[in-house]
Length: 236
Image: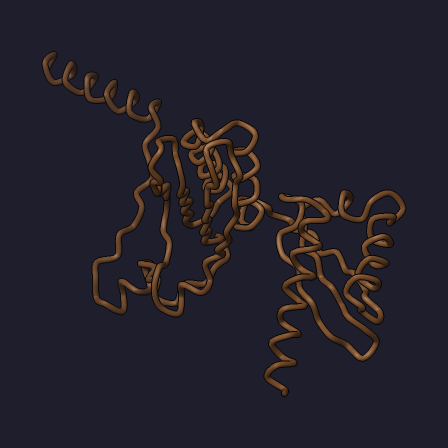
């Protein structure tokens, strides 16, 4: 009986998350988390547009609270908004943006969209990123395209630090699947080795010291001095 209750609880949570994402719109919500407290249910909504989600004077939050009480029979749902400061590193936000652009511009421009979003992620400072598009792009047969840049872990425990997300774009030719994986710049990679002077000393390697770069004026002065020395020697 406890197993059935647990399964039913997870189904209800999934329905609540899908309802909130569908109600507020695609591309507005990244993740939805549900926590159970003695006071009531705490619903955490992560978004990069908190003003749109809250609404004018909190009208959208009030309306969403009423619907959750009535439709899903929650006792006391408390909605908390968590702002995403860097949306370029949030995989779900990027995946939803790609899906919306594919629906708006069409699947023929999928390469332009993918390369544009990949460049946006890498310019923001990400260590690595990967975008996968699968579907009728643009031929009648379904294909899978991969766009990647930088360093990205695929296996092992360190692969868990990669932010991954999925989205679906409904176009005229059919449904296109979008997968995004991003390795943020603040991610701690345990097997990454940084070669510095301390490590060189431990390995008994020669420590390379950076030589000061000569400016153009110093080089010209040096050439003039060499020429003047040659002229004095010839006169002698």
